[in-house]
Length: 391
Image (cartoon, rainbow, N blue to C red; front, top):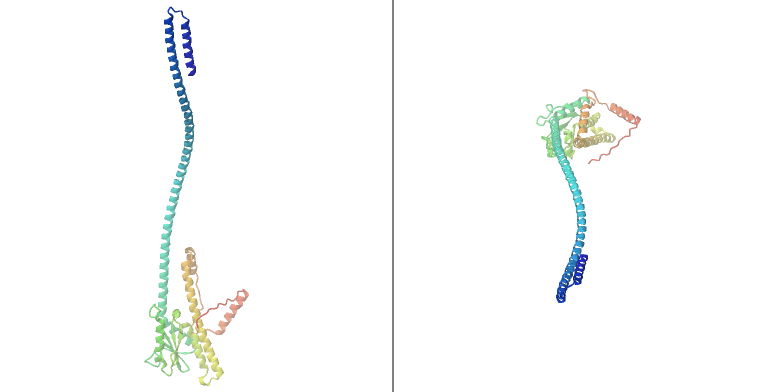
């Protein structure tokens, strides 16, 4: 631009020089013309200078604008670069979001599946619980029915057992109809040394055993109607079912003129044999002090052994029932079913008791000795269990 302006100025001065070289006729006119021309040229020079100044300013503005434009281009490039990074990050986040959504959908489906499984399992457990409750209720009902049946047959069972003991040991059995005192007739009695020994069978009236001890105590007092007779021994016995022992805490009552003993059917034979031992002597008052001590010692031993046997049987009965209850509630279903199968396949055959066949002590001792010998041969240690009971 400056170059163009200089060329214009140069051409102006060149034209002026050529004009001055031309011949004129009138110097003044020429001078005036020249002055005018010079003035015109000077005006043009001033205008050109102004234009040059304006152009320089425009060049400076344009240069500034060009520098700003370059900066804008750089910023634009940076912005485009940042935009690409943001776009890349956005796409990455979008992909992660999609993955998270798919994972959440899968987790939700799995949770719904697990929830449905849990609901099904809970329903199965509820049904199994109801079934087990029904089984336990049924077992309790069956046990109660068996107990009631046993109680209802208790009197007849005691009578049959007493008659068998009397036959095996040549003891006179007195039935209720043959009791010599018609106004007071016990269930059962036997005669030893011309004395009547009363064995009265007592059982609960219903399945509620709460009042049974009180009932037994009242019955001990009512036995006075038998004890008042001179030919009735002042030791009387109440025979109760063995499955009621857990509620009985007192087995001997001293009523003053007579004594009452609470026993079970299992204790009948040892007690009767102890009483029969006295029959070996014609008169009790002729016994020597040593013989009396021996008789008392034997009877005391039988009494203690009988009580301990009753206590141990009652203890193990409760333990066995508790174990059976735990087996029915704590064993896995599959194992329990197999246990029931094996249980149904088992059968116990205890020795059969035959009429008029006496159980000899010698035979029992031989069997015990044989069992101990087999245990020694098989190196089976003896298991000694200590069971503490209230005396």
